[in-house]
Image (cartoon, rainbow, N blue to C red):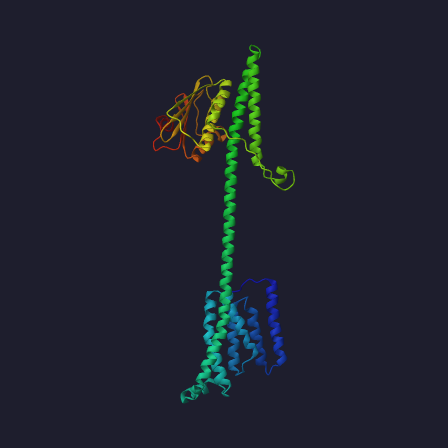
Length: 420
C-alpha cells in the first residue's frame, strides 16, 4: 500500500536516505556488496512512511544479502529500527503484525549470526549445525540468551513506540471527528431554529397583514358608501382604518426587526447587534378589542363562554388569539359577512374548546387555505401548542374548532367538522 505524502515529507525522507549513504561512504566500502547493502537499507528508510510494508520487505532482502555474503554487522543495519517503528506507526493491520513478528525473528537472526557465524570464524550454516551436534554451540548459551533478549528489547521498543504514536494519532483524529460532529450538530440545530423562527414570523406576518388589510378594505368600502348619507359614520370608518394601519405598521416593524441579520444595519456600523424590542404578544384579554374591530368592519360577532375559566399560559393565549383573528379575517374576506359569527369558548376540566362558526357565501373546497397560509398556519399553531385543530364545511356553515390541550375524544362539533 502506497500512502499519500506531501512533497516536503518526500523531500525529507529522500534527504535522510542520501545522507545515510554519504555518511557510510566516509568509512569506505570494502566491496560492492557492502555498498548495495547500504543502498538497500537507505532505500528502506526512504520508503518507511511511503510504504511501510515495502520498506520492511526491502530491509529483510538486504539483510538476506548481507548474510549470504557473510558480511559483518554494519552501521547500516540500524535502519531496521525506523523501519520497525514505521510498520507500527503508519502500516496497515497486516503490515503492523508482520513488523511485530519481525522483532523476535530479527533478534534471533542477529544473535545467531553475530555469535556463531562471525565471531567463531564460521562461513556457513552447515558448520553451525555441526557445532550444535557436537555441543560446542551450547557453550555460548548465556551470551546468546543475553544477546537475543537485548535485540528483542531494542527492536520491540522501536515497534512499541510506533504503535503508541499510531494510537495517539487515532485518538486525536477521533477527538477531531467528535468536535466536527458536534459543530455540525450545533450548526444543524441553529439552522432548524432559524427555520422555525422564520416560519413563526411568516405566520405572524400573514396574520397581521391579512387581518389589517381585511379591516382596512371593509372600512374603506363602508366609508365610501356612507360618506354622502352619514359623514359621521365615514369619519368613524376612516378613524378605524388609521388605527388599524398604525397597529399593523408597529407589528410589521417588530417582525422586520426580527428578520434583520446584518450587524452593521442593526447597530449603525459599530459591529455589535442592537437588540430588537419585541412588542407584547396579544392575550385573551385582547379578544374584546379584536372582536370590536371586526364589528366595526360590519361583522356581527357573538361571543359566548361555558364552564369555569382556567388559567392559560401565554403561548396558549397567543394561539387562541391568532386562530380567532385568522378565522374572523377569513369570514370578512371569503364568508357571508351578513350572517352572525359565533365564537364559543367551552371550558372543561382538562381542556378548552374554541369554535368559530360562520356562514358561507358559496361552498368551496377547504383542503387548501387561501395563499397556502390560513388553514395550514392555524393547524401548525395548534399542533405546536400541543392541541388539535379541525376546519370544515357543515352545510352552509364553516366551522373552525381548536382544542387545548388535546382530548382523547373530541367534542361533538369537532368530530362533526372533521368527518365532513
